[in-house]
Amino acid sequence: MKILVLTSESISGRQLRDALTGVVDPQDAEVAVVAPALPEGPLKFLFSDVDEAIDNAETVSQTTVDQLGDAGVAASGDTGESDPVKAVEDALATFAADRIVLFVHPEAKQRYLEDIDTQELQQRFGVPVEQVVIEGS
Image 1 (cartoon, rainbow, N blue to C red):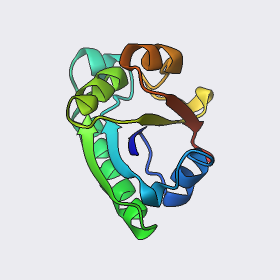
Image 2 (cartoon, rainbow, N blue to C red):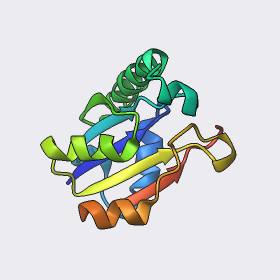
Image 3 (cartoon, helix red, strand yellow):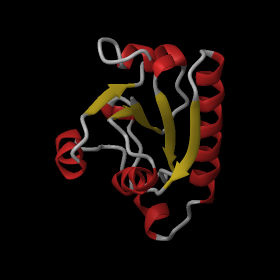
Image 4 (cartoon, rainbow, N blue to C red):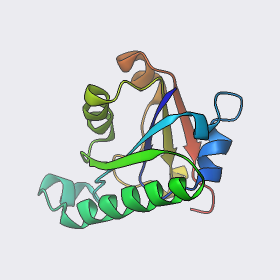
């Protein structure tokens, strides 16, 4: 099974395993991690001031891949567009995911553009979508 993970925060093997309970063991899956370059707010997005967001996304992607590897999960990682839906679209162009898992902050702490409509995403791409709130955020 191919799993596309979209996350704006580093996640662990345990977090992914918990998200996929009853679906698949992550150690038996091919995992692609995409960290969107989420801007801190609409002004930074509007003025394309995304250098900090890109740096953060690169760190999140690499740290997540490392943590998943430590848990025995084969994963690759990349950064994505600041629009999470576009980031998913781009990833699906080269990685035919069987399932998408979105890791998001609690509503009160979400970053700009992090509020993603999972039903709309599922309808648009025809892939089951699971949303998981990142604990402790």
